[in-house]
Image 1 (cartoon, rainbow, N blue to C red):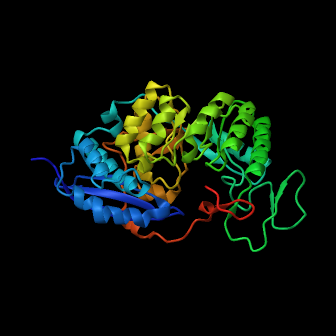
Image 2 (cartoon, rainbow, N blue to C red):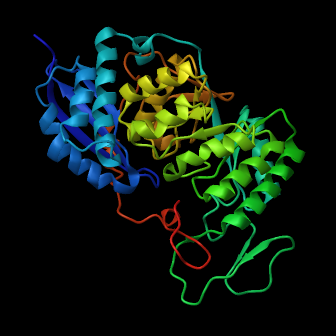
Image 3 (cartoon, rainbow, N blue to C red):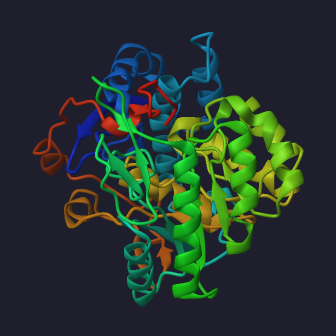
Length: 416
């Protein structure tokens, strides 16, 4: 008799700013269950509704061993496909099924994928600051903790009104060598952003940080799709002297044709993908060798199954993985990322958000980082669990995140 899906629970929790969605598949075998990440924090209720109204009724009673079939049927059974809400819902199911398969085999998921290529995964962390010296000081602090890959930002992603380098409002009093952003009267609320000033300020910051920390540390930077096409080309050229490990999300998914122009202009390594949903977004970049790192959000692309397939495709073209790993990827999702990292022959680096103590209590088995490396715990499946009683003590709250409401200096909306 096959083991089937008896029930599926949807667990939501918010122990920090991020609203997390966890899928728990309960099987027909007593005590056997699997966990998956379905987190889309800005639209978490839509994912929950998709799971409860459409995905769970579809999967009940099905054989848990048929992961490939399940993924493909879930993708096409709604006819329209590759959207962020349904992809995240499908990811929760997919990851939970891999967790179950590992438990049945008494093997970690990385062994099911093909076994270890390494013992641990290099991670990178985020050093922010309000001005260049603060960023440099934070980089040094991370170096002292053993981190060797560090992403440098100044004022978050550059879209906040308190971004370093901006005097906000109509005051003429600004710090020396800083840009001033003058807003129109009655400007609506939002995260104001001046692309040209951002470029100038980030170049000054990177130059200062490099002069302070030297070349032994690998620096990264995230543009977060905020630049227009020709500005992106210019910026990728301008950062070349700073020898970044990679420049992340230099363009929006709508502007992928411009990667060819950027490739022609600079040797700066490029990473792309956290907003991708459709395979047609990443396939041309890989096939034409226009990027150096793929960094999709594993739940956004549909789970471990498509991530495994993309990893193998990218490997043929010498492109490495750097999966998206922010705080709005749940601890379950980070565990899934790590299993892919440990297996992948073309692993590059893994983003790490540094979870708080509550996360480690709520998610026993959450991977640990020591001296800049993330280590798996070698337990069967994904090796992570959830304390549902503790999760229930942190219910999700509805709010609109300002950073997603980016505006140009005249108040017009801009892509985050």
